[in-house]
Amino acid sequence: MKQVLFASMIALAVSITLTPLLIKWFARINVRQEIRVDGPASHQTKAGTPTMGGIAILIGMWAGYLGAHLIEVHNAASPRITASGLLVLGLATALGFVGFTDDLLKVRKRRNLGLTATGKFIGQIATALIFGVLALRFPNAAGLAPASRHVSYVRDINTVSFGLVSFLVAVCVVVVAWSNAVNITDGLDGLAAGSMSLALGAYVVITSWQYLNACATRPRIGCYDVRDPLDLAVVCAAGVAACMGFLWWNAAPARIFMGDTGSLALGGMLAGLSITTRTELLTVVVGALFVAEIASVLLQIVVFRTTRSRLFKMAPFHHHFELSKWAETTVIVRFWVLGGVAASVGLALFYGEYLHIVG
Image 1 (cartoon, rainbow, N blue to C red):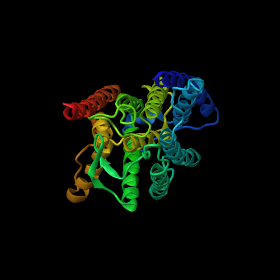
Image 2 (image 1 turned 90 degrees about the horizontal axis):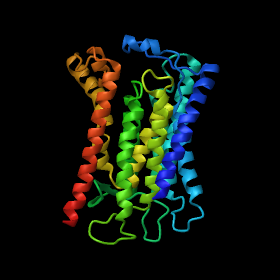
Image 3 (image 1 turned 60 degrees about the vertical axis):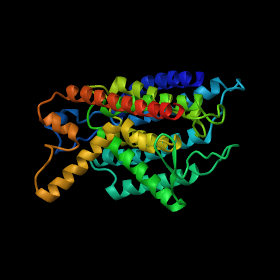
Image 4 (image 1 turned 180 degrees about the vertical axis):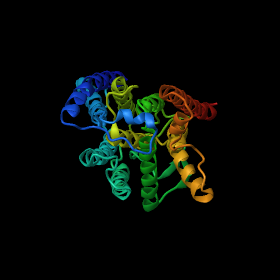
């Protein structure tokens, strides 16, 4: 369990020190954010802020993960780098590359339009398919692969399973949905980074509990069949700390934005964790804030096309509250509170399921 602490310490140190270096470098080479013209008028003052800060988050996560394993390499009792950990970080990094391409095109075109919707979608689908295929491979001695073909809530629901094709389709839906949900949430200073810290923090607890009650080491009623829970806890801890280090510079007024580089990567990380921890349905609760954000966009579209009127003043709905004269920092902090409540409810449901089984 020491690796979880080491990962968080290293990721925090790397992220919080690398981000200001990126701010200076991006400002010097003119890598700056273009603001959508149809957004709140107050956001126009943010034009020119350096973007693509998600690079610091990704480097921080990898540094924390690999550094924690390097520190403990002499300890034979410590777990080694695992397929599950690498797959989740690989998914996040691949989606971060898709986002980086989008950000780079925005910077070069000097407008808030990067990849086309089709281009971004193709990148997300291709990444999800590769992840899905690999996640069914690499079984351990007990025959557990990083992912299973069953639908999962807190553990596999054995009565509902997928064939290979339907499993890959489901993975694509999960990856595309979560990466876009976090991407949409990233519209206010620090909103996505702070909210993701809370969701990943919940997953540090979930994966640690799965490790302490793993069927491989403590076979009993209520144990968890997850391939690499401790290594996933290391990944989560590195993710939380990397987000917090970046948030130090991204909090209002932001000196740098994470861009699609960071938001797509973090959404992919949440998707990968939901699959590898067998908690796809529970993640909807843990990440309820992101679900609400993307749902507000979908509802806005549906209502407008059917009634020609708008449900919100602007979608995603964090802008609705801005246009309702809430201060930006008020919206951010209150949404963080909602994100914390969602993460807490998710943890309560997770532990409640365990008590129901063992009781």
